Structures are given as structure tokens and as C-alpha cells.
Length: 348
Ligand code: HPA
Ligand code: ZN
Image (cartoon, rainbow, N blue to C red; front, side, top):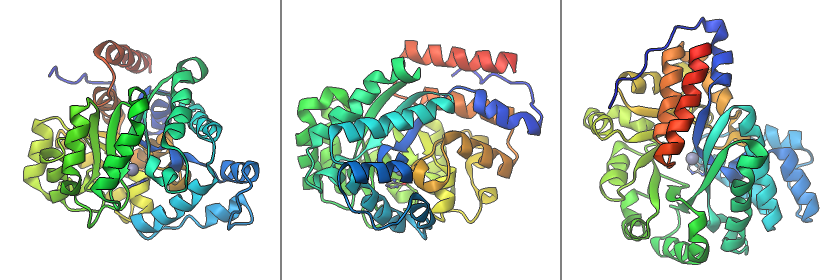
């Protein structure tokens, strides 16, 4: 590992400009969680789906959560407006366009077909719509995008196997497999066999762990599921041996500060551990999780977190560098992204 470049200090009032300008990868964003209330209303109308709210504003006002489960219930209701391949394409394009404005140059999108097959949709149709948006991303939005299919951990492992089977005809359009939904009570070990099968099939592996669940779930994701990245992982800060392991093995953590705030993992951003994670040498990244629900896209996550924790240009560079190093792109692409990142810091 070459030492990380030292960058020039930047005055606090210019940090938002730097955070906006720097290229970055987003590695933890559920595409269904990017569905803005206005688009939800438009799709409800297009597909004649009744909504329980009178206006987009009323939908936004309902977005007050006590914990992960209270969010997942509302998130699930929002997905009912999605019906056709075009709906999935349009939803993904709306996110990609918004991400381009934040100078995201590569993204790996989470999606969960089980939510949609649960409403009678075809899993392959979902993949096709989302993948068409990823395929169009370089020309339309000046960025690359790939797909990670998350199993829903509140369902059984047999259902995850069924899900994997359903997408096999389109498996070349999916780069990785992840694990999402209600964490506590659904430890990684529940999915040991299906993750082993996914690994055999050549999928890259990630899992949500240590968002609300204990450090033991992070150990399980690493040692039993053999994942390459941990999504969230903030509870690792309560386990010094785990911190050591994450640093030594350079396991990336896709941290989502505004999500943690909205779901009350931390009482305020000033308490958030991302600054301490970087100090400990952990490969942390900043991401938006479900931006339509949690109050901001990736740059909003960066600017609010940097302001609350008084972080500076060195941490900005480190986080952006981590995002490219942790992504599932090839070495040539990685070098190209890091060159662009360096160019911004050279001239800022
Ligand atoms: N955590 C777990 N599952 C999810 C989330 C999340 O933040 N968003 C969508 N599915
Ligand atoms: Zn998530």
C-alpha cells in the first residue's frame, strides 16, 4: 500500500465547494430508496395505483422514523407504484441524473427483486429495466453504473435461493449479491449456503451488517458469508478486535451518515463515528442509502457530516479515494477515476 497523498488544507467555508467538485463513487444506495414523492405520484397515476397520501408534500411529512423497521414499512409501500420495465428504467435514470450533479462518476446500485416479485412482478423484468439505465449511464450521464442484488434477510434462505434462481438468465447484468432489510434477529449465518452458492457463481459479495445489529453480525458477514465490503458497519466501533481486523484486511465500510441520523443510530451527526473510523485507518466511504427518504443525496451527506465533525480536505480526499478503491471496477478504470480525483485536488 503506497502512503496516501497529503493534500493542501482548504478553508472551512470552501469545503462544500471541494466536496461537490471532487469525483466520487457511490457504493451504498438502494434504487427503490431514490424514488422521490413527485415521481411516486407520477408513477401511481401512470399505473392507476391508489396512494394513501394527498400530495407529494404529505408523503414527505410522513418520513419520520424511529428505527430501521419503521422506515422499511414506508419504503415497501412506496415500491407498490412500480409496475413495468420502463418504470424501473425511469427511476434509475432519475437517480443517475441526480448523482451526476453530485459528481458521482461510478455507482453500484442496490435493488431487491423479492420486494417486487412479492407484488407479482417478474424478477427478470426488474433487472432488465435497471440494467438498461446502467448501460445508458456513460452516454447519458457521464458515469458508469452496475447492479448489486440484495436478498431480503427477513425472508428465508430458501426464498433467497429462489430469488437467485430467477435471475440466473440475466446474471451477466448483475455484478454482486448483498443482504438488506430488517437486521436484528436475522444474522448473516442464516444465509451461509446461498452466499456460498453466489460466490461459486462468481458474484462479488457484500452485506448490510452492524447498522443496528451487534458487531457479531459483522464478524459473521466476514467469516461466514465471506463478503468483501460491509454496508454500514458502524457498530464495529464497539469492538476493538473487529476494528483491527477491518483495518488489517482493508475491508471497506459503506457508511451512510444521514441514514444513521434519520433511523436514530446516532442522536446527532456530531456523535457520528466516521471521523474516528478514518483516524483508525478503516476504509470508510460516505453514501446516501435511501436518499429520497433520508434527507439528501451523497453531497448532502458529505457536507452535513463534514460541517458537524469539522472534517477537512485530507479526509475528503481519503473518502473519495476509498470509494474508488472499494468499488468493483477493474484496475484501468480505477486508475482513470483516481487520476480525475487527483486533478481536482491539484487545482483546488
Ligand atoms: N437498511 C437495510 N435495508 C435497507 C435499507 C437500509 O438502510 N434501505 C433499503 N433496504
Ligand atoms: Zn442500505
